[in-house]
Amino acid sequence: MSKCLVEFDKIGISFDGRALLDSINMTINEGEIVTLIGPNGSGKSTLIRTLLGLQTATTGSVIRHESLRIGYMPQKLHVDPTLPLTVKHFLALVRGVNKKAIEPTLDKLGIAHLLNSQVHVLSGGETQRVLLARALLNRPNLLVLDEPVQGVDVNGQVELYNLIEGIRDELGCGVLMVSHDLHLVMAKTDTVVCINQHVCCSGTPQHVTGHPAYQALFGVPGADESIAIYAHQHDHVHDEHGDILEQDDHTHCHH
Ligand SMILES: Nc1ncnc2c1ncn2[C@@H]1O[C@H](COP(=O)(O)OP(=O)(O)OP(=O)(O)O)[C@@H](O)[C@H]1O
Image (cartoon, rainbow, N blue to C red):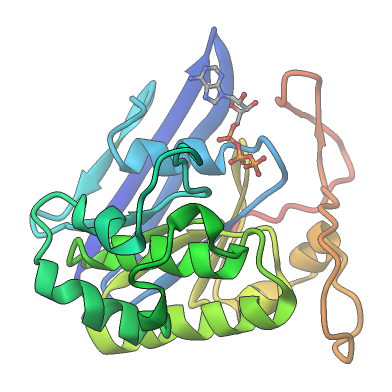
């Protein structure tokens, strides 16, 4: 039985008295890839920030295993473009980093040749790999990736997801990632959790995609299409504050 690294226990988060997240339950086990999906502004990054300790939950708690060590990959690299900074020096800034691990880590990610490149001239795909290298240099047992394929073309996305899966296989770490893509990420995911204030839908991709509730939510096109269009079709209605309006004829998708 794999170790539970993190448990979100009935997490609720409100801003100015308005509920953004309500009673979110979710676990991430060692060796498990969990993908968090949901529409813009549904609270995915806020949930990640709560896990990182950067956001306090209004209600509920995050239960962390004592061995938990997170490697975090943010959505974007924020570096002053006027500041000369090579990849090597950027990665050497990781707290407690073993500098001897920098080159092998870049090599593992196929970007050893970028060691002395300036970080602000990197392409989207290269930047994501450097950010992934930084997360790995923290020697994590949980990788937390906030939209890891942002700004990367489709081929690059497939390669990145393959890399992430390979890292999970090699290190046996857990992975929690946020994604807007559905189709590509599904093949690389053990568990999908869809949030929109509450957990709308969750389970293995096979279970979720085969479930009528999932099809009602995402309107996945035919299996022969290479990319699914992200269409979040709710089986329930939210009011202007994001609260769910009661309806008589809706199909429940909580499971
Ligand atoms: N500290 C804060 N104070 C007030 N509102 C906040 C705060 N942090 C986040 N929000 C709001 O919460 C909502 C959810 O933001 P969040 O970034 O978590 O969504 P998301 O699902 O990650 O969105 P996206 O898919 O667009 O990245 C947004 O409307 C945001 O403005």
